[in-house]
Amino acid sequence: MDDQQLLRYSRQILLAQVDIDGQQRLLDSRVLIVGLGGLGAPVALYLAAAGVGTLVLADHDQVELTNLQRQIIHQTADVGRAKVQSAADSLERINPGVRTVQLEQALAGTALVEAIAGVDLVVDCCDNFATRQAVNAACVAQRRPLVSGAAIRLEGQLSVFDPRREDSPCYQCLYGSGEETALSCSEAGVLGPLVGVIGSLQALEAIKLLAGFGEPLVGRLLLVDALGSRFREMRVRRDPACPCCGPGAI
Image (cartoon, rainbow, N blue to C red):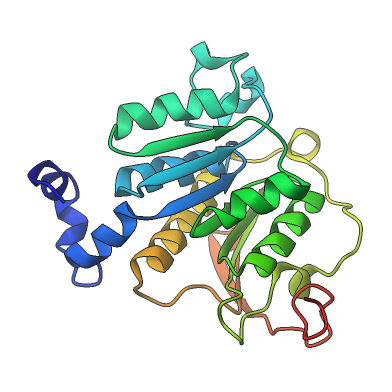
C-alpha cells in the first residue's frame, strides 16, 4: 500500500476493526455485482470508494430515462448506453485505482459459474427470481459468500448466505424453489432512497465479509419498512432437506 492509498483510505484504516490489514484485504479482493440498477448502483459506488480491488460488473441492460430516479450511478447523458459501461465510467471517476471488468450479458450457465469462481464474494442486485436462484446455486457450488438484497414499493430486505459456514442457510432455504410471482419495479414502483438504503447495507455487509470483521447477516433476514421507518429481523435456519445446499444436493 503506497502513501496515496494510505491517505485515501485513512478514515476507515483508523477503525480498529479494519486497520491496514483489513484495507489490504479489500484491495486484494474481487467482487461480482449482479445488476447495475437501483441496488447495484450504491453497492458499486461504495465498494469502489472503499478500495475493493476488482469489481466485476454484470448487466445486459441499457440505461433508460426511467432508471435515473433511483439508479444513481448513471447520469442523464448515459441514457442509451450499456449500464456496465456507464457504471465503470462513474467508478473510474470516484477511484481510478479500482479495476473494473464489464460483463455486458445476462449471466447464466457456464458463464455464471465461471464469473463466480473468479471472485471472492458475490452481491446479488438483480430484479428477478430465476436469476437469484441461479446465482445462489452457483455460489453454493463454488462456496462463495452471497450478499442478497431486494426492494419493491416501500419495502426492502437483506440477508447474507455463506456456504463456507455449516450453519448458513442458502437463498433457496429461505424462499424455496417456487415460481416468481412478485411484481417488478416497472409494475409496482419503488422509492429511490429505499434502494439506496438496501444497497448501502449490502455494501456494508460485503466490506465486513471481505475485511473480516463484525457479525454478518448470516442466518438472519433484515426487513425494512420505509413507510413506517422500521427495521425488523427474522431468524432463518438452514433447511436440511434443501435441494440446493442440503447433504444430498452436491
